[in-house]
Amino acid sequence: MSHILILGGDGYLGWPTAMHLSSRGHEVTVVDNYYKRAICKDLHINPLYEVPDLSVRAKRWHEITGKEIKVCVSDLTNINSMNALFNGKCNYDWCVEKKYTGIPDTIVHYAEQPSAPYSLMNNTTANNTISNNLLVTNNLLYSVKEYSRDSHIIKLGTMGEYGTPNIDIEEGWIDIEHNGRNGKFLFPRQGSSIYHTTKVMDTDLIWFAVRTWELKVTDLMQGPVYGIETEESIIDKDLSIIFFYDEIFGTILNRFITQAIIDYPLTVYGKGGQTRGYLNIKDTMQCIEKAVINPAKDSELRIFNQITETFSVNQLADKVYNVGQQLGFNVMIESIENPRKEAEEHYYNPKYQGLLELGVKPHYLDDLVLEGMFNQVIKYRDNIKKDIIFKGIKWI
Image (cartoon, rainbow, N blue to C red; front, top):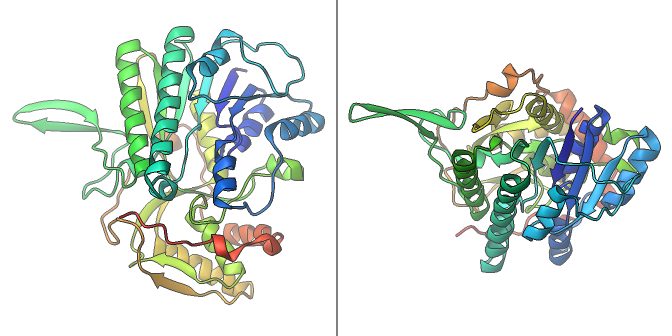
């Protein structure tokens, strides 16, 4: 089994990834500086329920499973902090044995500000997003170049890098014929927010590092994720996955289900024809694991589109409406003025075969999955705060 370093290990995806890989025998170290928690505190945003810090969760994981997840609280926008993860100088905030695990075989990079609305609130939040996301990525590339060129980087990109082009979206690359000559290029990017644009810049930085320093990277262009539990998170309440339902950090399906439970109209932006690729959080775990055990080659930037099916906003709202009604909720759907700058009706046909060919077995969004999510959120309905669901952050 390999040593896996997870950057951004406190988040919606980072912590369940750590448990998932640890449960399969890998040595896991997680790093975070609680940046997202600080944003939530500043903006008075509450998750559906509180989750302990990483040290408490890692200790509980060890008590239950006997497996260790090392914890390091560190600001990775600082190059010395990043280097410490590779040169043995890091200080662990929790571990069973204070012993440097060694150069990681794989680095899973989640350590970025993940919200498009937050990135467009004002100049300060835009600058925060740009500086955090690009500095962490650039520092990682330089540290791997300096200490660990054999390590495989798995970077979480986003399908939002592509925008909504009027052609089929290939998996990262496109073959072009121009004036009688042929070439292979990164698929054209057109991020729709400052956040998405930083992800485009990430890809460009990574492609430079792969070409110049012969690194090996898998860039996963992930669509919006939904879900509230994985097979590991249900073991104990202290291992729960953090779940947001607000406009800034809550993904659309998680928001819609929460809204339905408290008789808050499902907020459909504009015409509701905006179509994206989605996946269950359990499938995110599968995708990461498949990328770990099937690494990219040296000097390769391998790109997968990490989705399992596509839906429009209207289709998601209808699904939540139907299941909510069956469960006895008075679900309402309301079309509101779109605060975002985006096409509300468009062509959308992404390819996403690569991860399926590696063996990912999708969990598709059916009524049973939705009912399970409803039942999980219902347990915490008294915690839901209506005033944080929608504030109408405008993108223009």
